[in-house]
Image 1 (tube, rainbow, N blue to C red):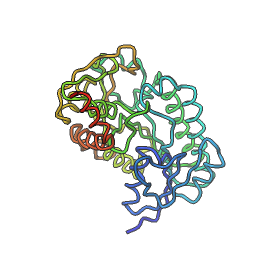
Image 2: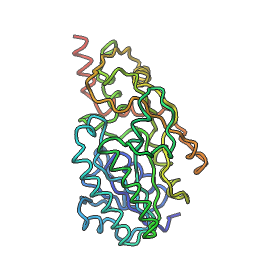
Image 3: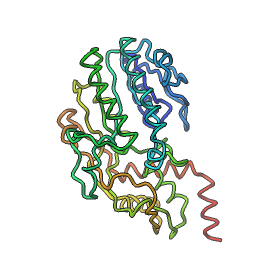
Image 4: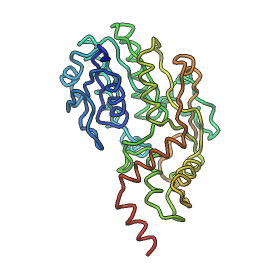
Length: 331
């Protein structure tokens, strides 16, 4: 049965936004997708897809017209190498996008808006050890966010709070912890570590060597895309208005990530470590206590299962490039 709500997904041409659009359409919602580009790997499932630059307020007004709910995912972002070398453009672009979307949703009388924040808002002083204590939502303050990208996310979280308090726009805020899966960027500089490792190992020969940024002992937790969109939707439908983590709470090292992907690929892989490459914080993990309490749910898909699906998709995308690499290694 079709739902009565009309919804907007900004960033619908991107990885998470594309998956979320399909999820909502499958549940009977009428969906408008908006982005500056169309999805890279398959056509959007949106009922309407509009190419709009949300850094312009008139475009944000056009995007939010006639919708009940806004899923605000549009952002200029990428992996650690990208966000560390593009701080000015990221803060400028994302500030325009986020504030224009909030204000346009208010003007056009949307009833609810969900803003996608990031674990990058958490203080650096809590993430200096690879055996990091899982980060609770309340740990965000005193603030010491990731320079550039993280500060804009934290600022917009506060804007969401005040738009609820002062204007009555019902907002939700979700803090992502390393989302990965098929249909995501896997090369070009904006890819995250799971996709990068899948690509590198797919391209390597059995017994070959790949480069790992840092010593590989830095730690993270990773959440598969299907769990991510399920969590987004559950939060939007809830009555909870404070920021909340969305991620797995299983912490592993980057070296362990390499080993898991290599095992999926059925390859023996050696590592070289680039100690001058961007590495981000030393350790980061999600505390899911609040997530379980609020949503009576938590991510279900194991890291191994999610990485298996992701590796097979990236391997297929690489196509002949994988075969050519294997032939060169055997020559």
